[in-house]
Image 1 (spheres, helix red, strand yellow):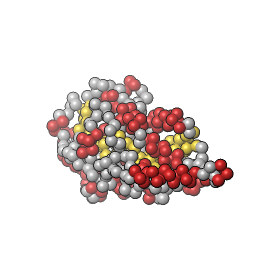
Image 2 (image 1 turned 60 degrees about the vertical axis):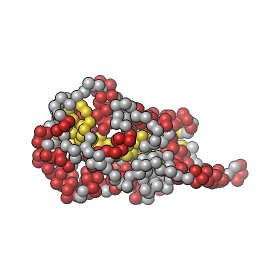
Image 3 (image 1 turned 30 degrees about the vertical axis):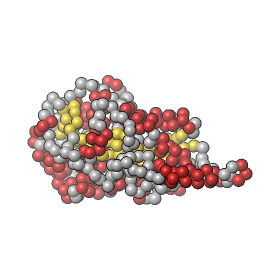
Image 4 (image 1 turned 45 degrees about the horizontal axis):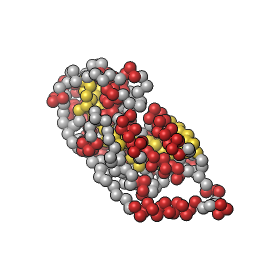
Length: 358
């Protein structure tokens, strides 16, 4: 189950951990130079450069530590880690999806995190204690307000195939990771047969338009090329209000006739998708890796995620912009779901291929 409540960890445990770390450092001639941490922190991240660079620069300024970042998709970086093996220079894996983190943990690539670090996040803390959540996004149905009456939209994503008014006017992103995460959750919550039936019914009844990613889908929605589409919440907010990922300000339109429809609370169509990070077994700077994860969960970084990226914080007490659904209300929309099950992506890819969607 997703941990949506305050996670309480022992203060004494944190103190003992700190004491042990100090005892192990050594001083002068007693220090074992072979155990010294690397001066450089190497981060492999599936997150976009526009999001990562400002936070990394903030961390550099606060710590005066050299940081090197390798960018790529989660799948590309997992493949790189497998190829590099024990020789990988990576210290931190900062992923765009929990499925990728689950795969890294399953393959034995992540270390256990200290309790004080795991205790920093209040929502979506994983059961395996090998990575920490960093931000959350929510699946939604976006629609064109000039063409669709929200009262006509369904209370469950499972009822979308019956929306005859959306025939030929519906958009989705079968090749995109967040859509695949949704289908994986659908396979888990329902079953693979039900997921296959849903996909087939959407194709047969709605004749959907497929997009490579969420940005062109939302642009098509604003241009009235389609009337509704499944996406992540922040793509709609990005179009209306902008965020750190928008390179061309001309794409921002505060008057764009688009809005977010959320299904009934607990519906799989409102699934929370979590980004997260862990420290790798290959790390030569594990304490620096832990320090960087703590930084990602501090007030400055979490506020940046909310105010600049329009993603949801995973730490209590962080305000979100007024145009975002309050954190507590957003949390209530998502189903209770063990996000580590999103690592079961292979069955989803097979299903999408069998349906001719990949």
